Image (cartoon, rainbow, N blue to C red; front, side, top):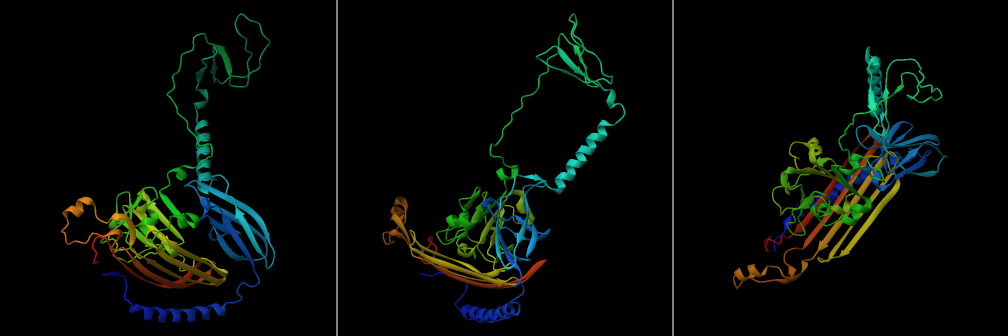
Length: 440
């Protein structure tokens, strides 16, 4: 049985040679800055799952996105976390915190309801100014307005008169002093005013418009772990407006709103991937969901920001192989998986380390699956009746659906106050079968 081979075994020697050379350079740089922030303190900022990706500012300077671990000087700090709701509204958290010298402080941020940002306040100020200007125009103060009140026989008139005394006809009542510019007169037959029907609906929990019809879906944390499958297409297939090509259990590419192939742009860390999965559905994408930290799906007109070819949408996979923010200490995660109809045995390990200036990242993943177990025959009754008697009819297993894949990556970056610079090296080798043909 022939297999698709993404990269040959001859590259393995080059992979380990480059990895050893890169590791030597990285650990040499790591040793040069061992005490760059030894005198500082550690601040950990976390948010709720719905607020992931909110911008974090310390003393008015942007430091990264939530959740965030960073080194800060001891003393009083002004912490601000904000997440954009739309062009005019932000959800903001601001608090002054005190951090002791050499301590680790954790702050869990509850973002408040949406409020006007600087642009929204500016537009509101311009609107009020225009209204005041309109009211001060000559001639507008002499305009009389009458509003009929159906339940009474009175109308409110707006003339320019001093305070007056009002009394109903044929009835002697004590004088009533009314405010300036207001007079109440008897109106025996008010005209009925018919207003168009107005329907008002509301959410008792409160939500912004973009929370209801957001064109972007994000998978991260627990949501990504629960939806994770062996291919990128199957991982995203349960999102609104997204399905998959599903050319067998080993090759599956996302389909967004009925568009696939070159009309859906697949990106890794903001850069388009170089594979041939868009040319034929039996080719797998070169992205392993096991080592992915975050997947973003963009639908609708917003996808046009990524080029004219992305008319269907954009899928961006983020794995932090080039760290974008400073890392203090050593962190990591391990994820084993076993079981399923294909007897899957897979696992991934990610390790990140840093001293506040130099950040290192390393990950490795491996996956093994057998032929998929199925109930009954692999072919339908009608197809088996048309097959030649010499054709073998398999039962209980989907022949040529096994797979074997390995991947590894090593990266590093130098994080500064105003940005970062880094590089990474990755390699992926995948052998898998296609169920359409038993010998491919």
